[in-house]
Image (spheres, rainbow, N blue to C red):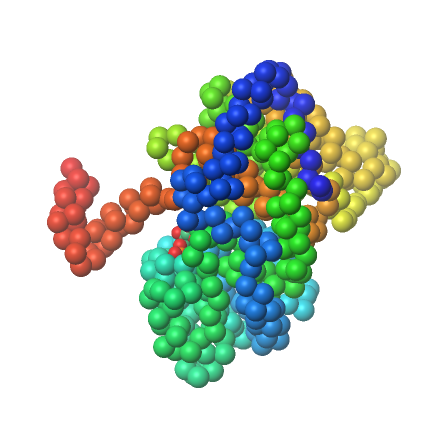
Length: 446
Ligand code: PA5
């Protein structure tokens, strides 16, 4: 595998027998997952998705992305949570966080409907003013407030620009295959639709049309991405912890959690990982944080954050462990120039590849953090490529499921997400919430 888990930096925090003790629980978690007898068993479609997907739809995604690439300068992807994080993570990881400002023959891609901000919406509308625009609205339920508001706005923009008929060629809808407001509306208007599979939850949906259409629009090879994920799905089937890095990662997280390490910090030394970290945080946060349990998922980009959060990680409350992702071949290098005046005293670095400096910073930081009482897990990723990223996405999805079962939660539901929505709707005066509104307003007054 192109992914390797290195656990030597947790060896002073975990005794060998602890792996033996958790092994039966891992074996049980694996069996519950594979036999579909654990909690949330209706949402396991992601397990076989890398191979067991709708091939006809996949071909339509490729054709549609070619059409979008040809007909627009800007693709606006509307969605929130699992309906946008995967696509954005993959595009920024493989292309660049500066993707939109790069010279390229693919459209700029902006993400909307993932917040409630007039400024963000107005800025994007201004960007779209003189551009040719397409929209991909993604919502499994079709009723989520943030994307629904954005869709109203961008639908109106497209209808104004291209007329009702013209806008039909530019609006693409990813939603439930048969039910829901958005599906009904898309059918009525004649928009091309793609499917969020019934048995795949939002945060596990990056390898469905949810992620694949925007990713393909960015010119990324989605066949390779799926092949990488498929390779991972074959590689991580043996529940034996000594033979399965994916399950071992899940086991180590839980061993550390049971010792009071209640926060995991995902650390990367590459800014292109920032949105990947966000995807990972949603995956683990929404899957595990329930029943008053769970490891809080946090993230950093080093060395940037060594100059902000580094102090806390080194020296603050000892409740965390770190998982460091090291991408070995990022496909570029940079030689540090010589300065004859050596004003900064750094000429000892002259001629050195920046990747070596990064690697050394990483090694030094891991040792310092371990000395400071922070267990460190290292995940080596062989290269930055579609195939290997596909493996990595699957690695984390599968380990998340196993880890959730080790924690005895249902990793596939998200009951807690409803609480804020109900309060918001009541306070905004949604019909049917009148009593609740009175009660909440009273609480806010007092
Ligand atoms: O992972 C999830 O299930 C959530 O983050 C959803 O993706 C998110 O709430 C958006 O939901 P929907 O796609 O129904 O608009």
